[in-house]
Image 1 (cartoon, rainbow, N blue to C red):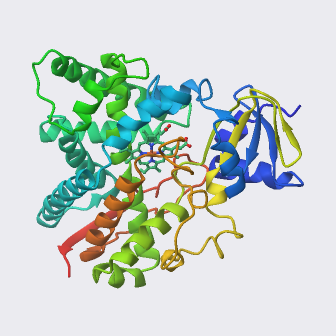
Image 2: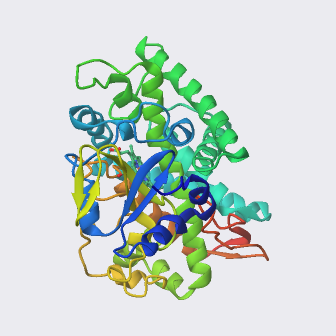
Length: 409
Ligand code: HEM
């Protein structure tokens, strides 16, 4: 039995699971993490295997470190079967065409207002943090959460902290816990007010959805759990700021893409968003526990083993993506994407499995903001734009500082 790999996982970051897979003759990693046996897989067939609920369950699989920071305790991520499908339907009910268009409009307006401020202020700004504030203001209003601009900015900063601290036992972890505690308390109070009629939750909003949601047994979520799920809409929407910073990084390294984004070529903007999600590091892997004794291509996977899907590895697999370390949006032009192929937000069908329900939001907002970013003129002062793959979540070290912002074409 291999030694527990948790310290190595924390040290090696995105490279950890690909390295364990490379060490194995057939690319199937067999290791131990968090005191449990683990099997690491990669590829569309492996994704199909993992997203089959008959094979892999989520309950009891998510480490406390991640729940206390990133997701909260008791979220949809940890449910299986009917409980999962009913809770998941609540998230998907928010993803209507009109709802996403409304969020897009709000985000564009918040960006334009912020960009005018960067231009007028004349000071350098950190794009990752600015994009977080833009997204925080837009998504909180869209979700029906009444906040002053300062409160919305605090929420955005706390959402960034929750994401930033989910995979480290150090100070970032404690910052993330404090951020989560603060925002859970705020949202719980708000939900209590809505439930007793002291606050109105706009029809169709995320606030109304979590306040009224009934679980598979017809029971309403307690206010704290409802707050956790409300944050599971707001926090990952704010986290699109990571992809905005990566888009700026891509435009810096490959400035030839700027003109095509500026031109209003919708197909290219969508392809650019997909390539940002594929190319840059965010979620390293997903996983659950084997529901029973399983066999994968001749490998025995005993019941209870953690089964991990290497998202980073799959998004850089040369069999799926020729020249995977070249940033080439064109690879997504004029072709359909298989649900188990491109997996930055998981794979499969979001209605029946655990695939992210927020992909349409992510792609829509990233497209919108990448085009708006490309249309701005700005300078990049000397800074550290390095992206360490040992740090989870990775980010350009500087957060991408931009200066001398001017309205562009
Ligand atoms: C699940 C990534 C944006 C809500 C996930 C998963 C990943 C992911 C990797 C896990 C899939 C699995 O366990 O198999 C991302 C990334 C985003 C993003 C990189 C970009 C910033 C969003 C947005 C929302 C959202 C905008 C909501 C508005 C959720 C929820 C789940 C989830 C509720 C749990 C789904 C379930 O367990 O059934 N996301 N996501 N995410 N995401 Fe996202």
